[in-house]
Image 1: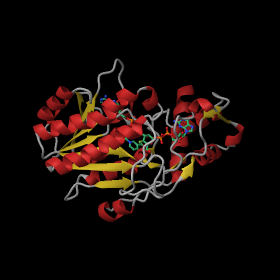
Image 2 (image 1 turned 180 degrees about the vertical axis):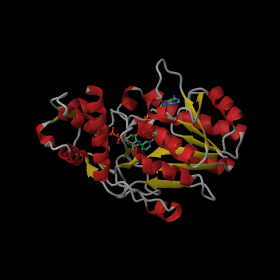
Image 3 (image 1 turned 135 degrees about the horizontal axis):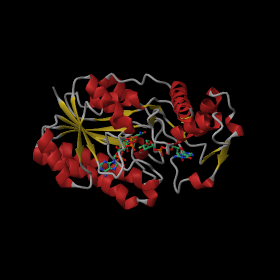
Image 4 (image 1 turned 90 degrees about the horizontal axis):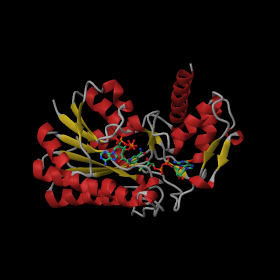
Length: 322
Ligand code: NAP
Ligand code: G4F
């Protein structure tokens, strides 16, 4: 039975990846950082099936101890400070975790067991002010936030350790992916949570920032499959993962509110507090390489994704108000 270690198992992607790996018969080890309250909401349903280990991407010795004790065959590095706006207010922390954290983990793999297969969670935010439409594995990077800059570092250090030390280190350049487990501060979930609150009479409006930004949104459950596929190949490589479609935030509002029988224009208020110092205006992937080499294709489309998230938030808020 192979063993996989997931950093960031308590996050959106970590929880879906753990579900997937357990279904494939893996022994799953999840690294969690010490917090004063429990953050296991997304993995509550599998808590008895995974091994939880304390560790932090800031702390090299915790990473060494973890790899020595659990001896994973695969390591998925999903942990990060992942919220773009916070990367301006906590730029150094973002660099420490999201950029240098990758080097700490790669150094640990190199010294403890260089045969470990490593996945790095890279991001379409690296394309930022896009140099090409659509974006492929060859599109140059132009990050627009400290988060994007940190992810560029994480990507290149992964490539560099692959080339310098012959590690099996793959980088997945994933476009935005969402789900009912998405953090409430990200725009899609903020919208579907807002729709549910307004529908249930708990809120009167929803304050958002730039409605014209366009994103290539897919379903997180589909994207973790691509992560796993990358580590099953004969050789490590980089892959763009997305749907190949782009939609403005405004359209996500239209679909999500419309599904609940509401008109978004009656409720959405634009608030400059949610604008960013530098915006990423347009992201759209060309996932042809993933289709060709990995045989990967997304299964959930834009409308199904928005509706799935509205359904889940309506159910959650109804249950909470009973
Ligand atoms: P998420 O929900 O924000 O989860 C982030 C995870 O990282 C959480 O488990 C968090 O732990 C953990 N973490 C943060 N700082 C840490 C530290 N210092 N040490 C150890 N763990 C730490 O993010 P996600 O959406 O699942 O994304 C997973 C990864 O993919 C991230 O690296 C993100 O940057 C990247 N990515 C995401 C997308 C997307 O659209 N979702 C697209 C491209 C790339 P707590 O639970 O304790 O906070
Ligand atoms: O949902 P968002 O916060 O996601 P963003 O910035 O695209 O980053 C996410 O996707 C990346 C992949 O491309 C990941 F690497 C990253 O970790 C994260 O998961 O914002 C999407 C868009 C932005 O253009 C933002 O300006 O929505 C716009 N927006 C408009 N109003 C808003 C809001 N974003 C948020 N969070 N909150 C708003 O009120």
